[in-house]
Image (tube, rainbow, N blue to C red; front, side, top):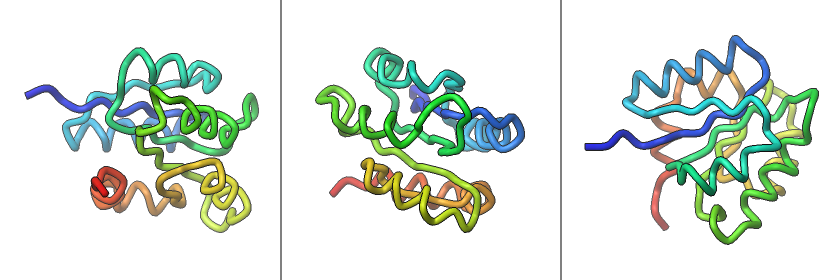
Length: 124
């Protein structure tokens, strides 16, 4: 069986690599996307099962990137889990508005990753 692909968008090394490692432990193939401006093109080409995106970036507006992904006919079906520091409700709300499937705090996501994946991947 082929392992499902997850794209992980991050700049901060520690939480990003922890997330990549946890996904690999859950038998996902993972592609790290460190330049968020390439996410849409990579998602079109690679056809991932889901995208996990750290909303904090010094180089790009990740909420805009999520909106582009959700606004594109070829990628709008891909679930997006948006991640930010605990308590950054404004950023998490902006991600929901942009079209993120789920939003979570960065410490919460690591502890409950499999539950978040199950919820994000539910077919309605």
